[in-house]
Image 1 (cartoon, rainbow over the protein chains, first blue to last red):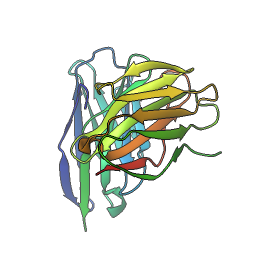
Image 2 (image 1 turned 90 degrees about the vertical axis):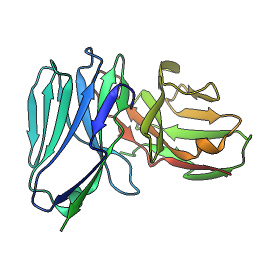
Image 3 (image 1 turned 90 degrees about the horizontal axis):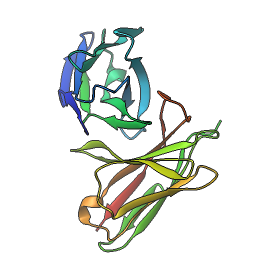
Image 4 (image 1 turned 180 degrees about the vertical axis):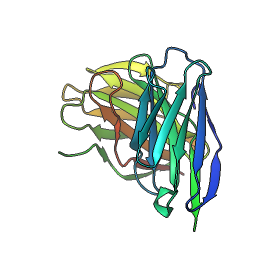
Length: 111
Length: 113
């Protein structure tokens, strides 16, 4: 992705375990960081986002952390379930609503 | 309310031809962005339109162009198609404010043969 590096590209975890996906960026002016989930054959959908004045945000089993000094943000999924299997994209907004994404992480939950 | 609608859903074109894809945003959304999705490259930003003006542009050649109409509907055009243009093209619409959620359409699957 443009100025957004996402790792890992693939991730396989056992059901019930946690998954962590990390993104780093270079544009210090970025102030909005959304995460999108894309299930097979479907459109990407927003699952959680964080703004630069917040360090962490949680929504049930998912959470996002942001470290503006180090320029990285991460998605954490706890107690993973089969329906969490999908491709996850981190994003950030540059300037006026230029939303760019990382390369994506294919998450597989093994039963 | 209706979501983002893209037409057509599938297209097959031959090298050298041109193609036009259409995107109808959610009612009230004035910002429309276009992305190219390929297996190895993720979601690549093409351009973003707001109030009939291209406000942002990605790193794609001039063969890729777009426009937006007064009703916020947008089209993108690819001229002189190449095999490498085969991809899923997604558009996303959002409200005209900072940090607004982007809503994606189902995409148009373009195959160049």
